[in-house]
Length: 129
Image (cartoon, rainbow, N blue to C red; front, side, top):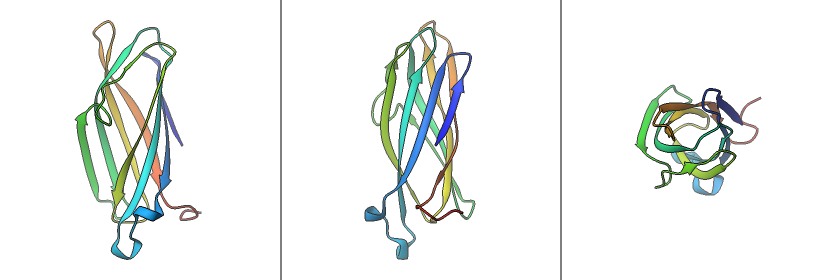
């Protein structure tokens, strides 16, 4: 689990990853993971999630960056006290990796800011000691 709070704007992000063995092909070096994200607005004003930026690193230190509008086709407006949740996925060529990133947000008052997402691990159960 990863948790990051943007203290100035009150955006709190929790991420939990899950290995998907039924979609993976270990012999073919295809490791599939889901990640479940919960974004809570503990601030004083609404904030719209405009874009995302992910940095995905596999076990051999190969990095891919993902930039895009919104998440899962949405640009949610998260009001004070509200939570937005979604699930997405990542595919690695190694059994272990990590992700980190940020959401670019627009506050109700017109202020743009980044909500940082702390690094979290992608690994099958019992892969790490």
